Length: 211
Image (cartoon, rainbow, N blue to C red):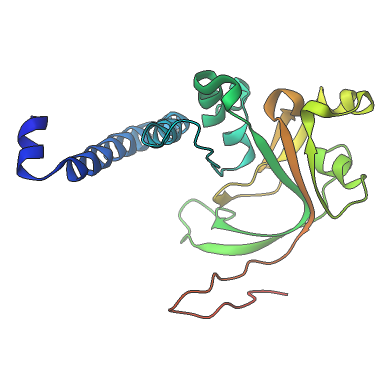
């Protein structure tokens, strides 16, 4: 019925409608099976790329396990890497300590949910964040592909890494064991995250939310 719908509207409206339908279908599949979430996000990303001119560079933000190209992490990154090959450049992001805002899943399942601030303590010894903090810089980008041989033992071994998503249960639950060289081409590290700042809009002024 594509020709019928386009005749009654236009190509742009038809395209938007099909995008909405695809999103709704994925939403139903994810509600029925949470394991479909990575596939849903990868599909949205690929359909978005298909609408852009060739060679367009796109930045896609998600937490570490979703960005990782390792199939073991069960994220959209593995699906995008399989489809895009070397055009996919996964960059992990992590931090040593500081504030995050996330949905509060620290209480029992029947508790009322909402977002709140959590202050995460310095990462424990033996974690990826502890290793990166040893570099001495407060913030940096590391090109994993060009890492010196001295870092090979760490980047080739499974290390606990923070991967905080939209929901927070505990710092321990927000960790995953990651082989850096298999998961990422680069790493962004921040030693101390500052508090959340409300984005300035016409409705409310920017403000510091916490000290």
